[in-house]
Image (cartoon, rainbow, N blue to C red; front, side, top):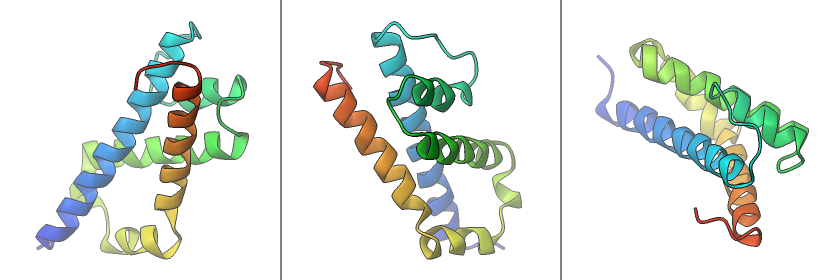
Length: 112
């Protein structure tokens, strides 16, 4: 049986990644950029137009893949994966990208 706190962590990660996707999609729509047809296109397009770096685009795509696992198979995520998130500071990537998108939105008068 999985610890209830691990389910909470998984849910928080899922929501945080979804918020990042929504923020990126909103920026794209507001700037009349190509509308993404899939979540994984969001970081690709943001990277192509220079809103986020290539490294952040890759990290963002990995987050989206992880989010898909959480949404469709969260019960399959191992506790070892949860331990890797703070150990490897993956959350810093999420925060860095969120701040970059926020700064971009604010400097371009986009309501986020």
